[in-house]
Image 1 (cartoon, rainbow, N blue to C red):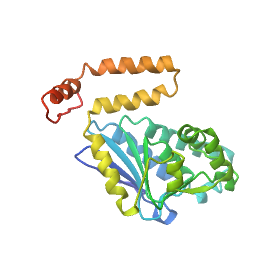
Image 2: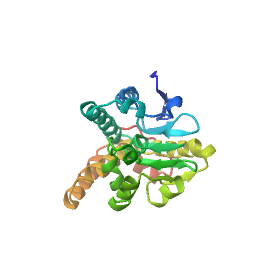
Image 3: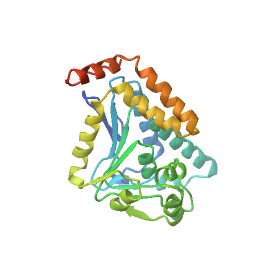
Image 4: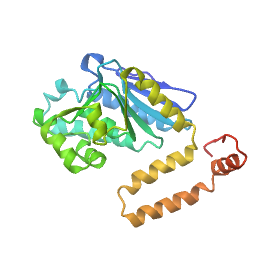
Length: 261
């Protein structure tokens, strides 16, 4: 897969990396980049051997510094709404990808950059990373789902504080408020995240996919419905070859050979 603003790396171990690569714009999202990301996600979603997807930014300064202000500055209301709808559509595809997704935030993750990280399942950061929803400084609000995903990650009051003030916070503060799982030295971020990705990729693929689906879908359900979904999914997995192999391997004290069947 070749793109103007993305680098996509697909490996035989089931781990894929997408790098946002617009260095002159600090990897900011313009319409072209969003559509390229959508195309990459559409292709990867059809790859049955994919196990984990990692997103990161090219270069040393930015993960994604935000949406492209140079493009947005000339927009009127109708075009701005279309731009927002594109971001929502693409990030929803990322959120619903059937494999775990990881944001390896290597630098600035502001505005749309923070929003794409929020659409991932797991967020890890370099110690020099910065996070924020500074849209109020530009006279607007988050447009790619940040107003909805951020409160679910860190709670409504903390999310409102960040969105009201437009403050940019360091990685350590992002970890303190529950936005980031772990903070690593910048030079070690890729290796550390890759280690986590490979560990996840080694697990039973059907169970991993089912786990993600249950958590995401149950978040919109009442507790009774959510628990019923877990019970149903738990039972269905007992009809898989992976379940038979996983339990047989445990009893035989050997590594399991999962085949996603």
